[in-house]
Each structure stands twice: as structure tokens, then as C-alpha cells.
Amino acid sequence: MSVIEELQALQKRATTELEAAQDQASLAVWKSTFLGKKGELTLLSRGLGKLPPEERPEAGQRFNIVRQALEQQFEQAETRAKHASLMDELESEQIDVSLPGRQPSVGRLHPITEVLRQVADAFHIMGFQVWESPEVETDDYNFGLLNFLPDHPARDMQDTFYVESPVDSSEKLLLRTHTSGGQIHAMRRYAPHPVRVLLPGKCYRNEQVTARSEMQFSQFEFLAVGRNITMADLKGTLANLAVHLFGPGTKTRVRPSYFPFTEPSAEMDVSCFLCKGKGCRICKYTNWLEIGGCGMVHPNVLRNGGYDPTEFSGFAGGFGPERIAMLMYGIDDLRWFLSGDERLLEQFG
Ligand code: DAH
Image: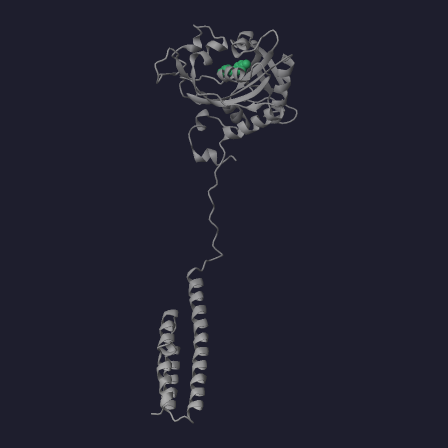
């Protein structure tokens, strides 16, 4: 067989084998077998030297034509294979766009957090900053410095969770029973400058757990100390808060009461935003809802906070966000708040 015949046979075989090579791997093998540096075409072309010189140019040209043709076929086959593998990939990743989407599970805010945000917003507008104070307090901060006498019944073990001190200390430690101790912390931090703070946080009392009482609950305390602060400022603050929380037209009133740390002391009421004056079970047909306690900071408490009561005065108040959330959202049992039950949480935020 002449070199040219061998070349034709090689071209035929290469073409047939190329058709059979479907994927990238077999294409690579094909390429090195036929077109590689040590491939069949190169090997065969070595035979050109044995031809008579006058036949060489034409034969050489034929080799070139065959090489070019095979290279072109190879490129086409390679493109086809790439395309096919891309299609396979697409096919394997195929999705049914008509299927219903999956609901992402979105976190929700706890109703107490919701109330806190609204309350903080209302106080923020009035120039109060949110301030945090410790949940484990000394007896002094929780009671003594707030003008509770040593034998005040609230100090009773029945009501207060006392905590064993990790260090040997004469100070009695307890879980705060209200946020009012934060008043002393804030005053001591800012005295003798005026201060306006909102103190939110968890409180603890040794209570029977029922629909209306829990061992752990939240309170928001507010405190403003400065010069010439009067009860009118307290009432104005309350009025603003009520409108912000419960809507325009909400009225407020204060009723005389007693707390050791305020003088005078009062209960804060808001007009029933549920029945709007028609009378309902929740307001017990009085049209008023009690939301917390308040008063003018007692001179002893001002002094304990580092202020001279002849120069400074202040007001303070405290209320329970659980009660506000219960009223706002119609929640009928206090135990829901700490239940962690998603059925409650899903309804908020
Ligand atoms: N600490 C009181 C309580 O737990 C609430 C309270 C009443 C806070 C009057 C105050 C206040 O700041 O002035 O019932």
C-alpha cells in the first residue's frame, strides 16, 4: 500500500472512530491517537521521506489537507460533546417551576418585645434613653435605697428570691422584684446632671403561677430628674405615652396611692381603648384601665441617688408590659408569654 492509500485508510478510520467518541474523555484519547505529536498521522508522515522527490510536494499537501480536515472534524465533535454534557447537566438540575414554593420560616418578635419597642419609641421622642440595670441586685438597691424600711413586708422571703452570694459578702443578694432599683443606678451614674431613662427588664417574685401571676415577668421603669420637674411633667409624660401606645383620644388619670420611693404616689389609669367609653368586661364597666404606678421621687431616694432634693426633683413610674400586651392583643393568660408556644408567637411581628 502506498503512503497515500495508507493516508486515505487512516482518514477513514479516524473519521469512523471520531463519530463513536461521544464524550470529552474519549475525544481526548482520539486526539492524541490520531493528531498527537506521536499520533498515527505524524508517524505515517515520516514515510513521506521515502517517496521519490517529485511526488513529495503533492503527497505533503495531501497530508496537510487530511490533517486540517481531521482537526476541523475534531473541533466540531468537541463542541457537540460540550453541548451535550451541558444539556445533561441542565436536565439533571431541572426543576418543576409549577411546584408551590417553600415557605421560609421567618422569626417573629415576642409580644413583649413589640410592646417594649413601642414604649421605647414613645419615651425616646420625649428624650429618654434606654438603660439597663442588673437582674441580680443587692438588697440595698432593690429595697433600702428606695426607702423601704427594714421590716417592709415586700422583703419577706415569701415574696423575694434571695440568692447565695458567690463571694463572702455581708450584702444580701436577690433577684430584683421590680425595676425600681435601676433608678438608683441611673441617678448615681448621672448625678448631679439631669437624667431621663427608661429601664426595661425582667423581674422575679415568689408567686403562685396562675393566669394572672408568674414568677418571672417584665417591667418598664421610667425616671426623670432635673430642676423644676413637677407632677405636671409626670402627667404630660403619661398622656403622651398613652396616646402613642393606645391611639389618639386616649385619656389618662392618676389616683392617689402609696409607694415607699415616691411622694406623692399615684396609680396610672388610661381610658379603656377597647370599648372606648361604652363599657366592657375588661374595664369592668369603669371605662378606665390601670397600667402601673408612679409618683414624684421621694427626697430620700433623690439623696441616695446623689442629688440634693432642695435643688432637684423628679418623677418615676413603673408598669408591666405583659398587662399592656394582654390588653392590646386580647391575650387572656399570663402564662402564654413564657410558654415558648409558637402558636402565640406566630400571631405577632
Ligand atoms: N416598683 C413598683 C412595683 O413593682 C412600680 C412603681 C410604682 C414604680 C411607682 C415606680 C413608681 O417608679 O414611681 O409595683
